[in-house]
Amino acid sequence: MHNKITTEMSICQAENGFSLDELVKKLADSFENKAFAEILKMNLQLTQEVLMHRIFNNSSSQQCCPDGHLTLNGSFDRRIRTSLGEFKMAFWRVRCSKCGKSFAPLAKFIGLEHYQTKTHELEKLVVEAASGTNYRRAVKDLERDGKLPVSFHTAHGWVMRSDCDEIKISPQTVGSAPIQIMPDGTGFKGSGIDGQARKGDLKVVIGISQQGNIFPLASKAGATWKDITDEWDRNQIKFKDGSILICDGELGLAESFADYATEQQRCHWHIKRDLYHMMYQDGGRYKDSKPIQDALAGVLAIELPQDDFQKVSEQEKSDIEERMEKAELAIDKLIGYFDGCGYSTAATYIRRAKYGMFGYIRRWLKWGLISPRASSMVERVMRELGRRLKKTAYGWSDKGATKIARIILKRFTNAKAWEDYWQEKMNCVGNVVINIGNYKCFSQNLGQ
Ligand SMILES: [Zn+2]
Image 1 (spheres, helix red, strand yellow):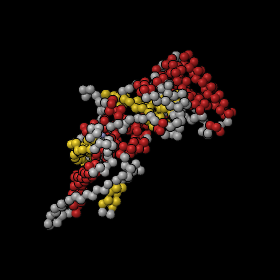
Image 2: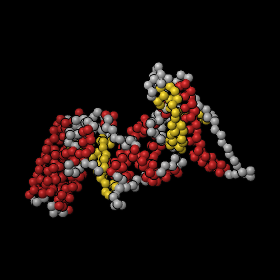
Image 3: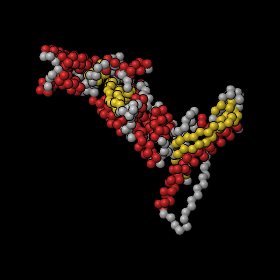
Image 4: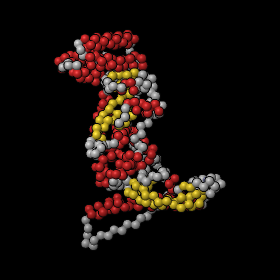
C-alpha cells in the first residue's frame, strides 16, 4: 500500500527580518508538538480509507466468512499516545452478515490490541526511564527530550500494568545443561503506613548456565523462599540433574531449594565470615576466632583443575576426593573442639554447613562440571539491583518493588533478551518504507 501525504505549513515571518535560530527552533517545536502526530494520524486515516475501499469492492484480504459480506457498523474513537505525540481518531467497524462478528479493519491491520491506548515503543521508553533513574525525574526527562509528556501517575500505572517484567523460565533461557542456582535477598525502602518508612525485603534467584550466561529465575518482594519454589512447583519448573544451589547459610534457604538442585554449595566466604559472629555469640573474641577462621579457609580451599574433566587423570581425581575426605575429618575435629570449649553456637553452625562445604567437589567428581565456591556472582547482581532500586527513589509497595526489580534484573542480567522481547512486541520487520524527497527511510531493526 502506498500513501502519499501532502501537508500544508504556513510560516509567518516579520518583514524586517528574523533570526535563523528562531526559525530553527520554531520549526522544531511545531514538528515535535504537532506535525509528527498529525502526519501519523493522516497516514492512518488514509490507510483506513484504502482498507474500507477494498472491503466494499470485494478486493480485501480481510474477509470473515466465505459466503458472508461485510457492512459498515459504526465506529469508535480512540486516543493513542506515542512518543511522537498523541492523536485521536475514529476507527470504523465492519460486521459480517453471516456470523455477525464485527471488527475494525484498521485496528486489525496495524495490530492494535483491544484496549490499547499507547504504542509499545512509548511503553518501552517509559518503563526504561522509570527503572533506570528517579521515577519523577524520568517523566520530566521524557518531556524535556520532546517525547510525549505523561504524568507521573500515568507512567506509574503503565509500569504496574506492563507485563514486560514476567520472568519466563524456558529451555531457551536455561539451556539443556545443568545450571547454577543462586538465591539472595536485599532490603529496600518500602512505602510506609502513615508516613512511616517500611523496610521491605526482596528475594532474588539468578541462574547461571554452563556457558556463564546469567538470567533471572525469580524475584519477589515480601515473600518467603518457599513461596518462590511453590510457584516453580505450580509451573512445573525443573532443572537438569547436576544443577547446584550456591547460597549463604540463611536458615531454611537450602531446604527450600532441595528439590531443584542435585547439589548444594555453601558460600565459603560466608562460612568464614559467619564463624566470627557465631564464636562471638559464644564469648569468643577476634584473637580466638581469627586463627580458626584462617585454618578453616585453608581446609576449604581445594582447587579443582580447570582443564577439561575428561583430560584429568584418574589418579588426580582420587587425590582430590581423598583431600575432600580429609578436610571433612578436619571439620569434624573442629566441631568437637567447639563442643568441648563451650562454643555451642559455632558448633551448630559448622555442623549445619558441613554438608554444603564440598558440593562443588562432589559435583565435579560426578558430573565433571566446575562451579564456584562462593556466591559472589549473585551478590554482585544484588548490589547493582540495590543501587538501582535506591536510585528510583520511591517508597515501593511489595507489588511495585517486585515489578521494578524484575525489570531492572532482566535489563541488567540479559540485555539482549530484553531487547528481543520488545522487538517481538513492536514487530519492526521492514514493512514500512518512507520517502521524503530523495531521502528514503526504511524501518530498521531497532535491536541492532
Ligand atoms: Zn463471519
